[in-house]
Length: 176
Image (cartoon, rainbow, N blue to C red; front, side, top):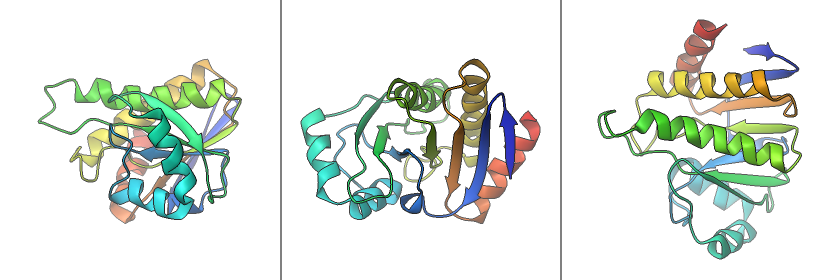
């Protein structure tokens, strides 16, 4: 599924983010940028040691912020590492921090002149964020950004599994 927002297109696809050919992919990282499981582990395994070397030099990333490294062996120029919140019931600014993770990733891509970016579903794996709520926050944040800024032409949400795709599809239909 896709929608046009200003001069940009937002796509939803079910698949493997490490196979993307956008200018950048976003890594759902931990605050130490230490690699890990899920999307984070897959990106580090596929991208090779160059990504971790740059992560070590950067040192860390606070929740809701984003940093950028090489794409290593991936078919992308860059990996944008962002740290989503650990879900603790929704009363500890999780929604604001999750929105910030998406927005800061987009701002970083814009500042580097990137035209295309692919996101996973941030914080919905090991960090426990409810999928439907996370999908709404992600898509609203991205579409709001694209209504204001026209430099990024393509945003892809690369979703792992049918359930994630269906939740994002439902959220996108509610925004349109």
